[in-house]
Length: 200
Image (cartoon, rainbow, N blue to C red; front, side):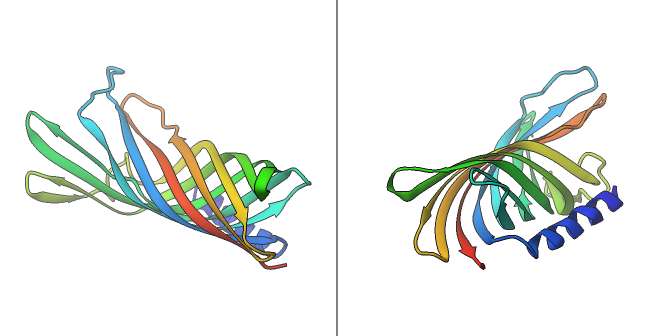
């Protein structure tokens, strides 16, 4: 898996030599943890929580109507809950590569609307569980460690300010796909604002 991660990083820097636009964005993740136990049930003691989202990507046109992007992202996938009135919380910091591809259309008032199929591969940088006044390290927890692959979609609206600068807002929904007898999947919905800076 490390070789896949290294390959994706190399592709990011290679594509940046030919791409046209830098995208800088920040926002907020609202993340659901979907836990499936060995009996195939989904207990409801986990509740969505918010966390920081930061991303830097490079965007290029495949044609007049199709664009793709490849970038680096930092995400906090947090969660809270309680079992038998015992509260607990998770804070998990992930970093990795994201990419998307899809159509982009410029219409009324110079607004550009795009819809992309998106994917990400991320790894845990730091993670803790707070339970009964103790912090537990998640680095050795198989449900958090290792590479996490996500797929989903991204919708964005962009307004051009001048030839070099545009502003945009976006919504992204991703879902990890972990299978097995007892699994934990992360389902973040991300709202963000950003700047597009043309370099060519």
